[in-house]
Image (cartoon, rainbow over all chains, first blue to last red; front, side, top):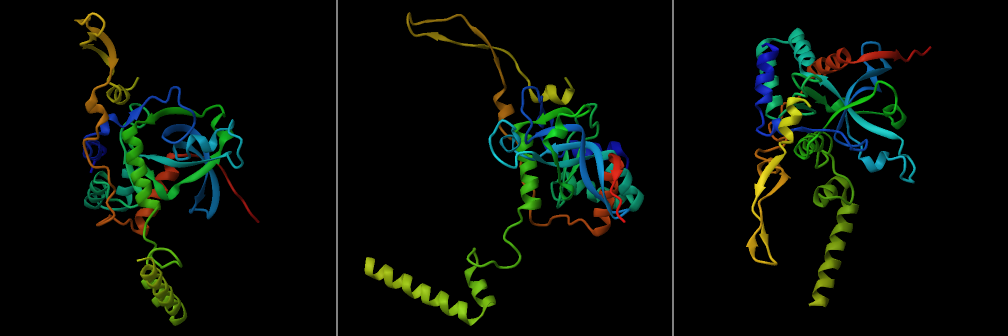
Length: 218
Length: 81
């Protein structure tokens, strides 16, 4: 599989991709902006240590949470998601797996079926083949980093683009329901079984009290 | 402006009919910047399906990590005793 084929498959994967971006002019630093030259920490598995990388990223933090004019604590950390150019992903994929496997992966990426990764379309000269948000690599940087020389805004996503990335983030990170039951949240029946007879008896008593209250009210 | 950005914001001048309520005669046509309504309406599904997801294998996570590393400039790596 060549990059042209992969790009063709992905760029046509959604009818709204041509309106995925808009200019960043006039927008404050905040969610939806795509930046280049930003430094962020990541864990280098090859040497089992943290490293500082400089690259492109999608800003995840809402603007009100990183606005320095807001008088609130902890507003100096920006959440971001690194962007990997599609051609680099494909090259690395083909180095490890065969073209059919690559085609299957690219096809799933276009159909929004890859867990923890999302394709974002072309940004003219910046990302000519589009890029991949690898949501597992979400990280942070300091707000001061955004003002550093060499850090620039590529563009912003459009309202559609924001909904698309939000959907990817929601699916990848906010997986619900939780695999194991939690107390006082949702699946009380399963919790009562797992928690043993004492909790089950307490819940049964609670149920009886609620029914008595309902009868008195009626 | 890049082609992708141009497509996103297809602003232009459109002729808009107008009506003058005071003398009840049609006004001159107005020329105003506008955006195509179709640009505001999503035309496709954006759900990332929870069912039948393509679960990345450990090897594929390794590939994506390798691609991430290849796509950035590494300035420093922590060294510990």
